[in-house]
Amino acid sequence: MSNEIFIEKKLIKNGSTEDAGNSLFPVFLKLENLRVVIIGGGNVALEKLHAVLQNSPGSSIKIIALTISDKIKEIASHHDNIKCYEKVYYSADLDESDIIIAAVNNNIISRLIWKDAKEKGKLINVADTPDLCDFYLSSVVKKGNLKIAISTNGKSPTIAKRLKEYLNDIIPDEIESVLQNMQVIRKNINGSFSEKVRQLNELTKVLVAKQTTLEQNRRPGFSWQVIVKWLLFAFFFMIIGHAIFSLIPLVKVTDGIKKIPQYIDVPSFLLMLFTGFFAQMVDGSLGLGYGTISTTFLLAMGVNPAIVSSRVHSARVFSSGVSGYSHHRFGNINKKLFKALAIPGVIGAIIGATLAFYGQKYSTWVRIPLSFYTIYLGYFIIKKAFKKKQYQNKIKKAGWLAGVGGLMDAFAGGGWGSLVTSTLISKRRSPRYVIGSVCLAEFFVVFASSITFFIFLKSIPFIDVAGLILGGVIAAPIAARLVGKIPYKTMFVAVGALVIFTSILTLWKSAANLIAIH
Image (cartoon, rainbow, N blue to C red; front, side, top):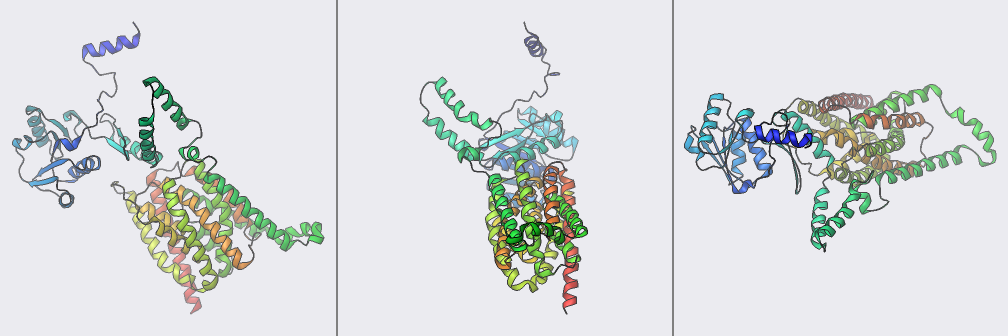
C-alpha cells in the first residue's frame, strides 16, 4: 500500500482534516431557486448583498435589521426580489429561508442567529466568524459564462481579492466567444466518446502552446507588434530620407556627411537626452506626462511655441512605439480597451494637429480648463488609493474620451495621458492594463498627428529632437517592465501626484503666457 493511500485512509478513518489543507467542498448553487435571508443593514450587509446580486441577481432576498442603510434601500428599490424589514430579529424570521447570512456587528446576536439556524437545520454564514460558518462567500471572477470561485479557507480574504483582480485582468473578455464556439463545436462532433475527446484535444491544445494567442490563431500573421514595428520603420526612413535630401547635397555627399556634427549642439543634445529618458520613464510606467514634461522643457529652452507640438510628437513616435511594443510583450494590454481608444484617438489627433497649424495662438486657452480638470482627477485618484475598493465602474464612451484626448494632445502639445489615463484610472480600472493599453494607443495617435504636422510643415525637426528620441527609446522598455512591479496603491498615489504637479505647472505656464500676451 502506498504512503498516499495510507494517509488518505487514516484521515478518513479518524475524521481529521488537520493535514488535508482546504477541505471545503466547492459547489455552485442555483440561488434563484433558494431563499436568502440577510440579517443586518450596514456596510457588511451591503457587501454581502452585492456578492449575491453580482452572481445571482434573480435570487429571493429578505433583509432584516433595526436600521437599514439608504444604500441598501436604494438597491432594493430597483429589485422586486429584495424585501426590506426594519424590525427586531426573531428566530421565526428564519423559517421561510434556505440560506442565511448574519451580518451584524454584535457577537452575542450573531451567535444567537447561528444557534437558531442550527436548530432549524439551515445553512448559515456569520460574517468575520469562520468558526460559525457552514459556507463562505468566495471571491468570484466572472467572464460571461465562465465563473471562477476563489477560497483561502477563511484564512485571508485579502489574498482572495488580489487573486480575483489578477485573474480578472489576465483572462480576456473574448473567453465568452471561445466558450460559445466550443459549445457549437462539441455539438457537431460525431463518433465515440474517445473520438470526441481526441478531436477536442486537437482543437484546444493550440491554446496552451508557447507564445500563442487566440487572436493570432484566428487571424494568422496579425499582430499589433508587427504593425507598430513596420510603422516605426516607415516613419524612421521617411525622416532619414527627408534629412538626407534636405541637408546633404547629392553632389557633395562626402562633404555633407562631414558637416552633420555641425548641426548638433552637444550640451543641448544631452539635455534633450535626459528629458526624453525621464519623460518616457514617467509616461511608460505611469501612462502620462511625456507631452507635458517635454513641452514644458522645450518652452523653458526658448523653443517657439508654434513648433513645440510638432517636435514633441515627432519624438514621441519612436518612444511611444517602443513603449507600446514593450507593453504588448509584457502582457500589459487590454485589447478591448485598446481598440476602443485607438481609432477615435487617431481621428482626434488629426483634427487637433490641423487646428494647431491654423490656430496655434489659441492653444493656451485650451490648456487652462484642461489643467483644472486634470487637477481634480489627480485629487480623485489619490482619494481612491486610500479608499476601500468598490465594485468596478464600467467605462462608458471611451471612444469620445480618446477622441478629445487625441485632439487636445495634438492641439496643445500634451494631454493624452493626463486626460485619458487619469479618467480611466479614476474609474478604478487596473492601472497596469490602463497604462499599457493607453501607451499602445498613444503610438497610433502621435503617429497620426506627426504625419499631419509633416504634411502642413513640410519638414520634421529630426536633429532638434534626436536627444528626446534616443532618451525615450532607451527608457521605454525599462518603464514597461516597471509598470507590473509597482503596488496598486503606490501606482494610484504616484499617478495622482504627477497629474496634480504637471497640471499646476501647465496652468502656471499658460497663465504666464496669457499675462505676457496682454
